[in-house]
View 1 (cartoon, rainbow, N blue to C red):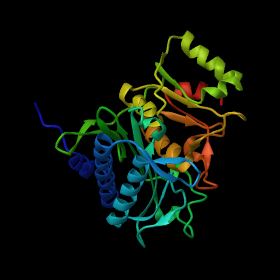
View 2 (cartoon, rainbow, N blue to C red):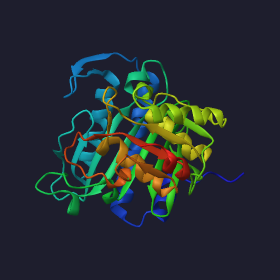
View 3 (tube, rainbow, N blue to C red):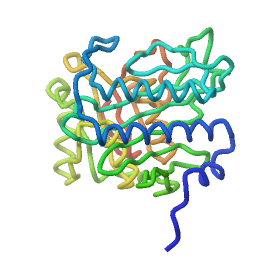
View 4 (tube, rainbow, N blue to C red):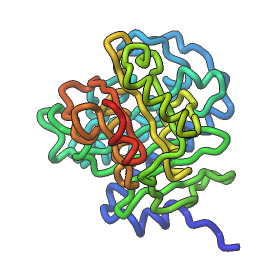
Length: 306
């Protein structure tokens, strides 16, 4: 049996920009560090709150620090911002990239030992950094993105030059290629309905859920954004919906979650919408900008009432 190809080999072939290639290697290394911590640490309250007043867990704080430290050490990143600390922080003068990340998406379910993840969006500092601000940029300006899933296995999906690739962290600490050029089919067979409270206010959303069930789509919803999107790549189809209403407001952050994931979905042939067009076309008006979103199989996204 042929040995699986290493991430380093694949990146060397499939990422033309050597600095973006190095940045992906840094993010893979950091994800491996976070994976190791999650698999061995007790989950406890850190005794701190983020800027939004949310209680932080020790794993939130450690993941956030590990990412900032590794990005700073790489000297590739001019500025970075985290969902935990959304204000841009200067890391390296003259750095080529701006990175926005969610260090541990799903931290509210990590104590239940559910799958959680990290999300990274990569923008060029030359065009998306004006006076130390990213405002006015959109997801379509990204030059790369990736998401890591910490579950029974640790995996990472990256947007490379010619498609979306899936890597697995194996026992000796190496990342190896698991799937290449993954595609999301136009029609979904599974659905993930998030923010179900909104269905009480949105009759069209409630009707769509009933339609999915009556047409015998399979309900697969974990409560974690990263694994719910990840399954669209692994199964090759699916739809994730997170609409908002006046009483059940939008919670997903554009820069830290929606735009990076939308880049991966679109690159795999899927689609996204927010009610005002593609998720990739949302222009940042603040770093904490939030939105409703639907993404996944193209025909189902088009038919979703938003």
